Image 1 (cartoon, rainbow, N blue to C red):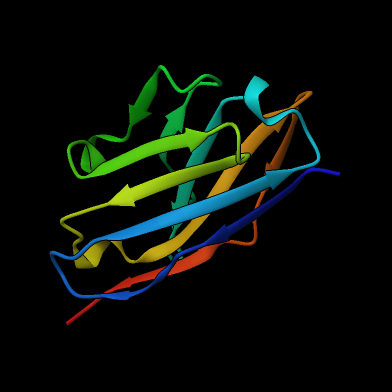
Image 2: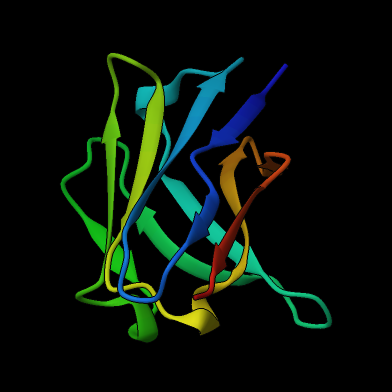
Amino acid sequence: QVQLVESGGGLVQPGGSLRLSCAASGFTFYRYAMSWYRQTPGKERELVATISSAGRNTNYADSMKGRFTISRDNAKNTVYLQMTSLKPEDTAVYYCNVIVSVSQYWGQGTQVTVSS
């Protein structure tokens, strides 16, 4: 079955950087677009970034443009989110997401905390 396993979260100071990884299995990874979302308590899950199946096209939420970079390695079935210039408001649980055959799948999430 489809599995998404995020890693790389942690505590970072404002202005710092982190790289999140999402290891995928159970589907033909290179055929599907992948996305990162994030969620804070009391708020809806919001889209962070999306990357096309071959990695040629990316899209970002406005607040992340210029600071976050989504990428993928289809040989490793892994999608990444490089985050720079982190702000306290980036604190959230970050989730990997894929839609396969009209079904939406999520990882367990990885906590990112930006604090001094």
